[in-house]
Length: 346
Image 1: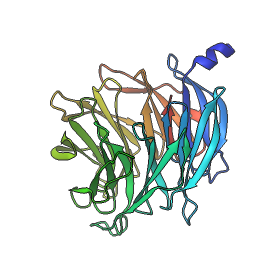
Image 2: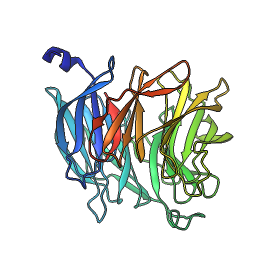
Image 3: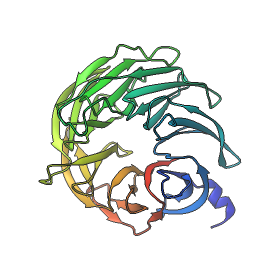
């Protein structure tokens, strides 16, 4: 492979926990024709468990506690990301981050803090914390739901509402986004089945369906979406094992919108494939066993490959995806990274 070819390849960005001495963010050149990745460079960023991209800017959380939790920004220069600045998030253990283009604002979900942090940016540079909203509440599972645990922030399809999944209280909070990107502090509250533990939510491209993965029950809830209103129309298990303790992790829709996948860990280590029917409901079609503790996974932009991060086995598996059947096949082209938990391809 020539240097000019490498420069044209997409980049695969892998974020990881750093207790094993690894740098935090590792960047690979990604070949979407072969499914092969080649190491390019690294960025030192502690507990870099989630990233977001906007143009030439990269934003990453550092999922730490004891007042050390932070957000960092980077800019692409000469083919590599370089650090811009870092700001504290106030909420402990931020585990999800997103960027809203319209207002140039960054939002994080802070798990232990049970809160959301909002940052305004200028040319990718983070300003000091602009807004901090903490939630209260609990639910049935006394081990996991003794207090609020914000797990994900997601923009509505019209970009005007920020949805926050709270695993601790079995609620989704829907905040109206103000013109400057800050949030209305009195959100609409959407109640989820007690004990389910809402974790990640995704929306279809048409903008009329939402898919919620519940961590504790391992059910996928399907909602009809109108503005910020969610009406449940289906609930279907992602983990069909008989285990009493479950732990689903991530959910994504294929680039062409035909398929949805969810990852299971703890009771089973699997990626589960669902077909999205014409009415938006789901039919479970395939289970793929994967390496232990599959956290984040992602489709590559072509839809031909699915990459699955195994936190416990220190590798990212690369699977061929059959768009006709929804089945996965291991390509045996593992990417070796310690404790990988986040995957992005740009």
